[in-house]
Image (cartoon, rainbow, N blue to C red; front, side, top):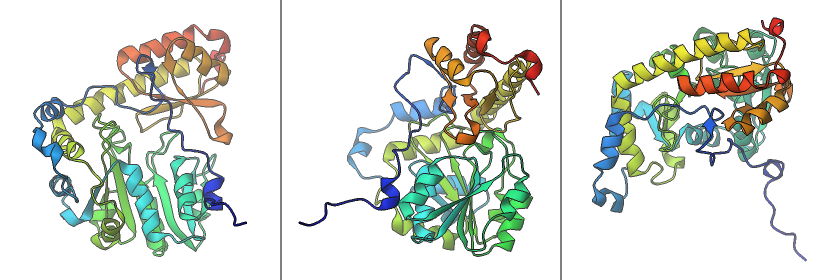
Length: 359
């Protein structure tokens, strides 16, 4: 009797990627790093005015209008921009384009857990460059010479720390055989970016971004990559024929043009982030400085705090990283939502850390 059909061994070992529950719309959702504010008015107007006939027709297969708008904003050529259905898609396509089974994919660790899934999809070996209690430079120094691709999230979840662009430039120059993929999904809240490395022509650097956090259209699914055209060219061959639907392209373009809305919204979120971090520290929690739209909170009885907040209809994100089980992540919501969180924690004082424990 023949053997039953089985997936690859690396895929069999994987559990389904769990981004977090999305059904609790009546809860205070502080667990998915979503933007708490409504999208730009221009996006809503485009949605309401979308012609029915456009839904019947296939979309532009290469999102040319959106690519042109993005490239003009960053003084790039349109072929240096690749638009996808969310930035996760381009992160995966880059690995499929440049990594063969058995080769090595690296990442600073701890970080975004989807990189592990990408490595398994490609049959690649994942190399974790540990930067807990170490400098960024020390972690990158551990990269093996035969590393094919390196993912660097900057800012990097769960802590929200940014990675210095000068350090990434040095790494890329010293490792020309490694494709350095800088995941800037949260860079709007950091005020810094490594995009200059692309502008300066580094051939082995790609910068990826997402509309989900910054432009408040996570449900629309738009992401993009920027790099040299010879690096992005294979992605056009690998992608699905119509990988970005017409609604996403139209709304993405409207969101991209709403620069005043973006500046105002990012300003509100970063101000709230600073205030809440101080108030959490005042309650005894350890909260590192974050450059993302989230905070990582440590201290107290974490499991009881998470379950207690849930009972109060407040969702925060438990850490899935073994080294950080004593903490949880909190999205930056509106002022009202964050006050609700602080009030909820005050109602769970017996599970909170002693105030003198804060750093």
